Image (cartoon, rainbow, N blue to C red; front, side):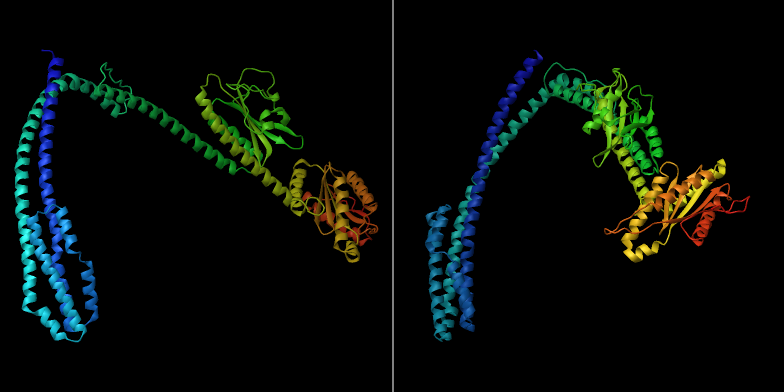
Length: 602
């Protein structure tokens, strides 16, 4: 006989046996329900009658205590207990609804009748105590008749419960015997069903489960060891084994995808660590050249294969100038106006090639088919630079998308670092400028004189120092106020700044004292420039409060290296000449004593 036929007959027999077994189990369950119903009815009767005798005793106790103590609280408690009791008719109706027979209810009615009689006696005793006859009350409540009535109530309730017990025990015995018979039949049916089911399982396990499971077990073991090269077998039949094989195939595909995601996650973590290190290095940069070196080093590592350039905006020329490049980019000019780049125009990343065709930037030159990316560097809405990249050939779209995310992070960090450097330079420049005159201050002078002295000493080139002091400056403050004095200082500072805009440095040392450094100036050239400055100051006309402040003059002391000694003493020499100019009548130029001639020149 064919296996399929045997399996079908076995399935049919199993179904019939299962149905028969289920029927017997239902019958046994029905008998057990009858048994449980009888027990539950007995518990219901006990619940309804359990408190009857106790209630009588509690009322009796409260009434007796009141007759002894005359404490009105016991009357209150008695009234509360009595109010909580239900009427005889209500109690009988509840028991009748629960299934009590007429014979059982007759016994209970007698008990309730005696309980009501006790209640009447208790009321009489309470009235006697209230009227002051406590002896009569005690006679009623502690008399023999009252005790016999309590005993009658207990006897009737016991009779009622006995009748219930007899009927309940008989019902339970019948239901238990019936349930035992049906359970025995159910167990026989279940045994036959289990035997037949085991026979069916033997054939099915051997033919349809064991062999496929052995094949799948090897695949599962290899997949558990993270060997995702194992390929699950294909099964033509659609059953649980086929579903299992499909689930294993899905697990393998998920494992391969998880491996890919883990590799991407590891690569992303490495790249973010690299970006973090670059950010730390950028934060430690003291100058734009340091920033350029950091970008030149890290950019090829963050975007492998992406050639590029870093442009920094030159505000004076309004041009993007190349600061560095890497991997030899072939497009984009080294310098161009910001309007030549669409990324700078739009303030966002620009890709002129790819799936979304766009307009190429003018700074790219002739089209070459190379994909480019322009990322603007900005801070607080101001364009400060540009990152330019060229995509490598044969790069997949997913890699481009991932790399562009890193490029945007790279641009953000570089832009922030560049903005910080610019802010630092601006603050440093502000710290070096005299607020009133706009000239460099004493701090800048100390730095500049040190640099120029070192350069002159090293190159043996001339260096001129002209010290200037406004004559009788105090009279402007005394006569017109300090604001007028500030106006004079601004005017003189403007003359000095114009005189050396291209050829040297002008400083305000403090108060009304100024100094001019002229690198490369010989003695004659420096003296001629000093005369020019003197003439311009003499021609100044400063008004304050619609009133001309009067003539303005200054005294000057000039010293030049190498004519007047070593560079390191140049400032002291010029200052000494200035003192002589002031001592000799002011409004004049005094040249320091010439080292060879030992004479003064006025």
